[in-house]
Image (tube, rainbow, N blue to C red; front, side, top):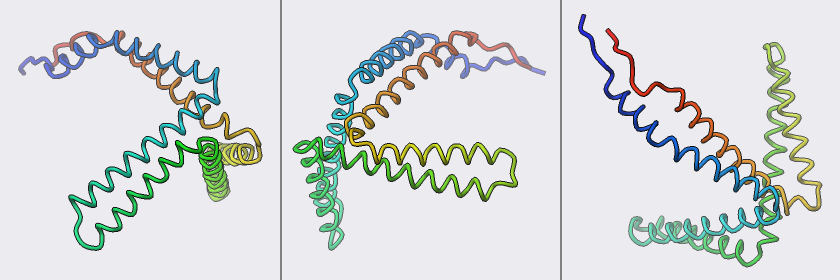
Length: 193
């Protein structure tokens, strides 16, 4: 039986150890940004609206480029139409950020209500299976969250920002967890037979 080292794994481990400091820095920076966004949820919400506008504009330009250079015939005009609609939505997001925040928050709340209702019905269907109560709890919580967001008058000014802040905060925590796990990895593998 020959002895061999797992060279590929050693290279990956060594690279992870070399990059660990960057995961730590990124984790702390993202946590800092998340906390800053939490301290100013209206600013965070308008950041989401701004990002939405940018993505819609980029999507519009890409659709127009595809319509001109990729597609032929009738589908070309459909792609061009979608490009124009994306550009209009992006422009609308920039020119009326409050209305865009209201629309996006309303769509989010409707999606949460639908998802909560579906989970609740699934929980009732799964009642004979162990753990169905957790699905029911999740469904009712999602349903209640959607309803609360929909009926709250000021939710368009904080909900999207809160979701962004939570996402960035947890990404930072994730990178710190990764850096911690890397610290506990051995730098080289054991010799295996």
